[in-house]
Image (cartoon, rainbow, N blue to C red):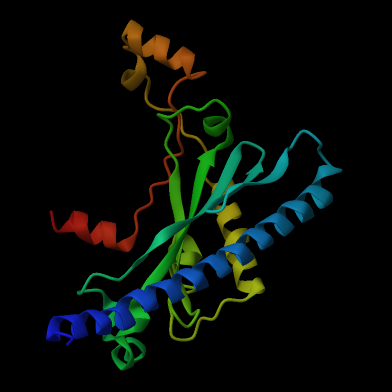
Length: 231
C-alpha cells in the first residue's frame, strides 16, 4: 500500500520533474534555432563584408552541444545553454503578473547566455582575461521567453506573457548583441595601476601571450544593481 509521502513524491514528479524536462527540451530546441541563426548571420556578414576587407575574419564555430561562437575581427560572441532549469527569486516582479499568477509553473525557465570575449583571449587561452554577459534568454514550458540584457535588450523582450520565439526575434537579439560588442572598446588602464609587477607575474603574462585583458563594459543586470544597493 502506498504511503502518503509516496503519493506526494509522485505528485512532485508530475509538478516538477516532468515540467523541468519539458522546459529543457524547449530550451534545447530554441538553442538549436539560435545557433542556426547565428551561423546564418556569420555567413551573410562574411559574404557581404568579406569582399570589402578580407583581413576582417568572420567565422562561426560550434564548440559542443551547449556552446557556439561567432568571431568577428577582434571580438568573440559566445552563446551557451545551461543544462539546468531555474525559477525566479520569490520577490521578483514576474510573480506580480497575471500570466504567472494564473499558472505559477510558467515562471520556471531554461537559460541561454550571450557573452562577449576578446578573440585573442580564446586564441591564446588567456584564462585571466575577462568577458561580459551581454544578455540572457529565459524560456518557459510554453516556449514564451524574456530577455535580460544591455541597452535595448533590457526592455524590448521583457513581456514573457506575449513573447513567442521566432527566427526574426532571435536574429534581432544576435544583431543587437554584435552591435553592443562593436560599440564597446578596450580602455587603456591608468599607468599607475600597472607600472609595478613581480617577475612571476611578468613570466605568467608572457606565457599567456600578454597582459590580462578584458572589455570594461560598465554593465550590471538590474538584480545585481539592486543587490549592490542593499549591501
